[in-house]
Length: 447
Ligand SMILES: Cc1ncc(COP(=O)(O)O)c(C=O)c1O
Ligand SMILES: N[C@@H](CCCC[NH3+])C(=O)O
Image (cartoon, rainbow, N blue to C red):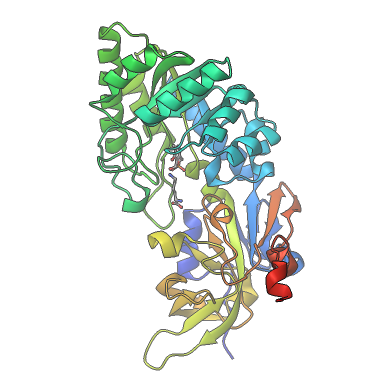
């Protein structure tokens, strides 16, 4: 019989991870804890797979970010990138912490409004806003639309005139700066679909300033996500500052600059993006422009606040190779490893989930895709059938990117807040999967 691993001296793979994840603690008896709540108790009651979010971590990180901006002497509006986590409870917590919303669809706009975020604190980004979405933005009277092309500008102007409204517009500029992140989440190099090429931006801004229904107020930028170094931000903001100065020299007013989001977190051992460094770069490059400054953080605030709980369905031995550990969570729940080869920490929930010393194993989901792999040949405490684990840093781009592929219902969602916790979205039923589907009569009853 294997000796249980002592959680008072946890396995080094677990210890190293938890050293960079202070939002989670380890209790000798109860195992992994979030805000004093044993995650195994949530798994017992709600079952797995199950997303768990920490309200306290969300609040602390939102405060840490705005504190860093203030410390740098900046007055910056923060608009949470709703795409990172659009649950109403999460948006409500962040709204109460003083954040507005950066939205990219009518659905996100309406979610933000539903969560109580005032229209005056909502900005609308995105490369392909439909006419219906722009009409909604005008009708709601949101703070600003970040326009991404000459074509969008014309459409918005015509709609604003038709609706007898005026919309504040920031032109999203593509600075052609490599954010040094994964190619699929890089948005600010030439060839990306996002924004207006920076050397064409002034001409378009001049045009915008003369269009009816449009109030050209400034420029926006977002160069990518999971950015850990200061250099890409510095290079991009320097281009933005030069553009603001050139625009003013051309006799046009500029009153606002939106710096985008993108600050990265520590998934493994890479260290996390520093809010102080980010604030310092904004201050150095844009601080003396006398403009309203804004940021659009998503991942940095929400990712470390969440975990995905899962159970080992079975161990599959492969002669001469690392065994497969098949979880009940899959790529339909957490897509990031399949889509970006993203690394997420995996930690046993309690001492009884990790009964033997570490081994090398490949952690997969049950979906019929070879890409449904959470971790390739990872050294982890040995996980037996029925063992439960937490997949870390899934509070951003986790539940929001889920699908029901392979007819797998959406997982339950739980919110922990101090000692309390509550299910904030029950597990989807199997029946709900086909609830909206109909079979035409001519197929049901062929003549
Ligand atoms: C326009 C825009 N703003 C903000 C964000 C948020 O980025 P992050 O979650 O990396 O902070 C994104 C996503 O990358 C985005 O596309
Ligand atoms: N979905 C990406 C981030 C993309 C951000 C959207 N521009 C991720 O999970 O890392």
